[in-house]
Amino acid sequence: METSKASVQPTGASTGLKQVMRRHPLFFFFFMAYAFSWIVLIPFVLSAWGIIAGDFTFIFALHTFGPALAAIIMTSVIEGKAGLLRLWSRIRQWRAGWQWYLFSLLGIPALLLIGIIIQPGALASFHGLPPLLFSVVYYLVNFVLVFFLGGPLGEEIGWRGFALPRMQPRYGPLWGTLLLGVL
Image (tube, helix red, strand yellow):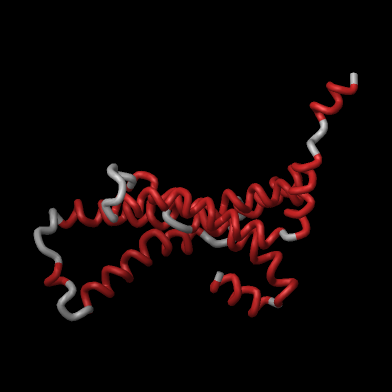
């Protein structure tokens, strides 16, 4: 009987690590966020420098998910399933009206295009562009992919969903936000 109980209960080492993680959640969050991001990014960088062979561009966007993975792990360790449900509910909140989503998807790319048009010499630097319709569609698809998969989806869950709510009570809204921006 005792052997089955021992196999079900967590070991002292794993319990001890969880205790330390609970006492220092921001340290472990930042450590894991950067570690996960760099573990994914290192093969891409090494292949770009010609140190290792292979094309690792397909994993480049995954490096932005380090903070999200760290937030999910730390939330699970600190708050358990209830905390993960709260984190998920904050991710799903849609507080803005539809016009702001439309502005994000069409207005920001339009502003970028206007910026290129009014920049002296910028249009002249574009050589051999495909037909205009194809360029616009290609740009909009890439904009959406990069905008959502290249940053906010992977990063904001960690930075704003986990770290910022723990930094602001300690350092205040301004200093917590500025410190987070530096980190």
